[in-house]
Length: 192
Image (cartoon, rainbow, N blue to C red; front, side, top):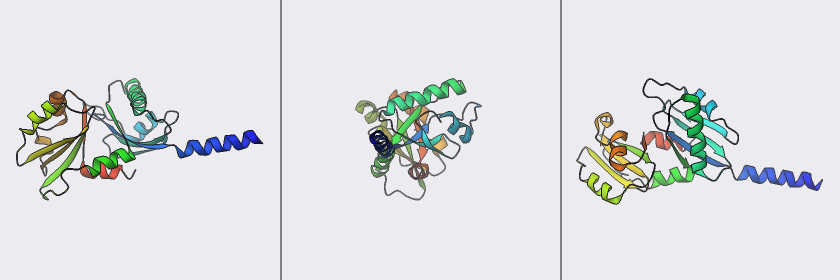
């Protein structure tokens, strides 16, 4: 009887410490590769990954997990995707409070209607010297700010595909991996 009560208490405690993780995958559907989100959800349905959800066809996922080491979860996901798909997919992971912080730290809270905000998740914190050099490249149609491991990019509506502040540019200049989402997607992910 005591064992049964202890086991029930253990299960209750385990359920309470599940963390909601939000995943942003870099280049899951590029270079002729197409992975449907239902397939992607099945690929990361590994032991411990619960309540997996996806949002639009661009590698946005959410799941619950009891693990507290984000890098270990990133390694598991990247390893599974490499093994299953045959190509590397960089993975960026945020907790719900972490994504709330990204939203709350937005340095462009009040911007004109003809501009669109994007957030690039970076694999590390960029060098202050490189950031300073990059800030000199801004103009009235392309502005950005770095806060911790995110780059907030404000561009003219419809011009993100032409901006010099693309993933490739950021990765090359910062020597970090990056993946970018628009502001609407960032906010929608918080609801998953």
